[in-house]
Length: 268
Image 1: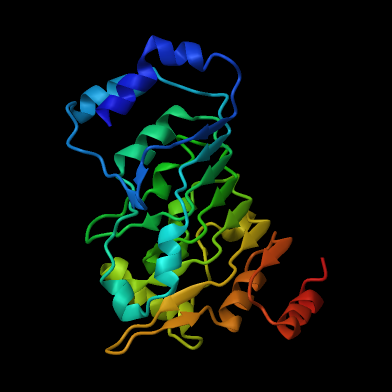
Image 2 (image 1 turned 135 degrees about the horizontal axis):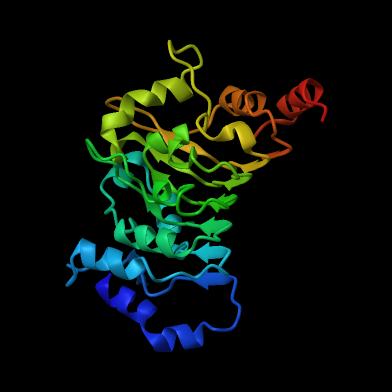
């Protein structure tokens, strides 16, 4: 992290970046299908924060931190028990999104595809995505996190609740596995049991402004002595559509019959 900061703050980098550039792609954080986690920094947090305070790339509107899909192909061939034993090899060190969110004030689009989310341990409420908040990136309006594997806390949408300009969310092939954030495992019932005492719909904390959403092939891992990967229920997808007032486009595994029902309810 310290090395990256020094590179970004070096005069030669500023010269190379002088021409207007709107897209930034982060490379070098993946090696043979693994995300390379940060080594121990040779700078304190205070020193890094001081450097970040005078680095800014306001012209960048699109950030791509995604990695390749190779690991997801292996994931799709495993059953839930095998999946639980797979290493958490695609989790970003939190310092990286913290840095990028702090130096890209004009960010509009963010791509985290193929990265694992979390895990969120007890007492830890800071996720990769929550660092890209309205204070750092007030214009962020499009988020892509296809092939995300992580816990169920993400479905609440609280990572994105401060983003008043969020209009588009793409999370195709999302897999929600309660074993990533066991502290929040009881929340699973709120999303995937139709008659649970507390009934939640997907991304309830950030859905009020959403206009375009894609949740193709969404699945979750069941709790209990025998686990299984189950597709998101039809009623849960329909509940999300019904509770999203500005939704204009929705892609999912809804049946034609249920699409017609929703079209009659929301003809616009």
